Length: 365
Image (tube, rainbow, N blue to C red; front, side, top):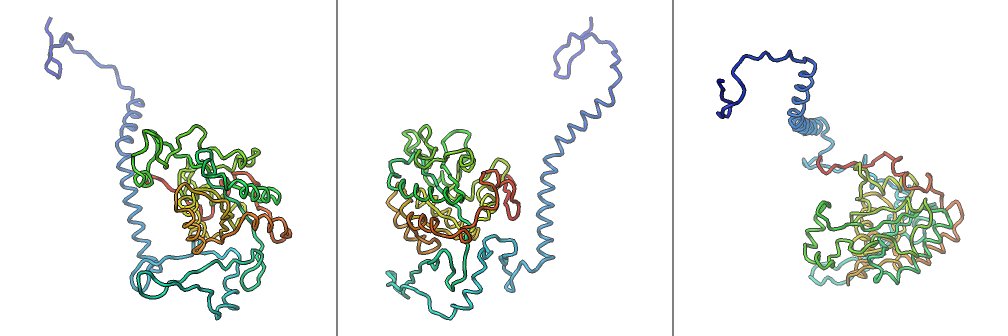
């Protein structure tokens, strides 16, 4: 029998005869073509949408010149900025009454020459009143940062003070949030600038401090751990130095909307490491989100020689240094109209209920 050649040029066993193909299934062909077209067009559509978004941003900038200053620069706005809100409504009143007075500033020599340096300290001297005497009822949260098994050897001196604060918060029904540093080294893990800073050495012998190495290393020390389901729901397994930077699986912020759901205005901050997570979280809390921060100096720790210097630094820049006894005694003695109850249930899921100013970020946007 005669054999024809296939498109590749190789002989085919198919006899040379005319075979009438079956009639096409129109609906099936249409579906296949549509799916193939969609698969081919989807990446192009994504590119087009991103280009359109850039074009819309350009048009918006042209239509809203208020985004630019008179010098043609981009002008920051407080219109949608949670860090630009006076949570207590006292700044204007205090300025009217005390703005003409001199600051309590300590001047020190400048080791590099030039003008003397200025050393400042917190003006929050009384948790119940502003500098001019206006009452400041507060809603507190205690953030217990990374007091976990991995760092137990460095944390023993913090346990007593942290326990005193926890007991006072539980007694007054004020919220507590625990975080645990949970970054691990694995092929599929997410890496960042923190990994590049610390570098690859110390992975084989499990000494690189950017990762958790021990089983259960990211669990809170037993004396300070959550004691019921409500408290356990408020534990964040964290990947960031600033605990405000952690996102859930949908890209939603976790900590900030949780605090706003409770109506929090004042953070009592304790934990580790002072020169990493404590500092990063404190700066975000004050500058980005507008909270007052009390730093519990006898309940913070680190594994480096820089911890005390960092306590001094942030205590002279953004935080009010306090002791655990200060916090416990205030919460024990303050009347109910000065320590206000949370405005939502004490459960971690409340972060899903607060939407205003909540940031949703995508790694690929």
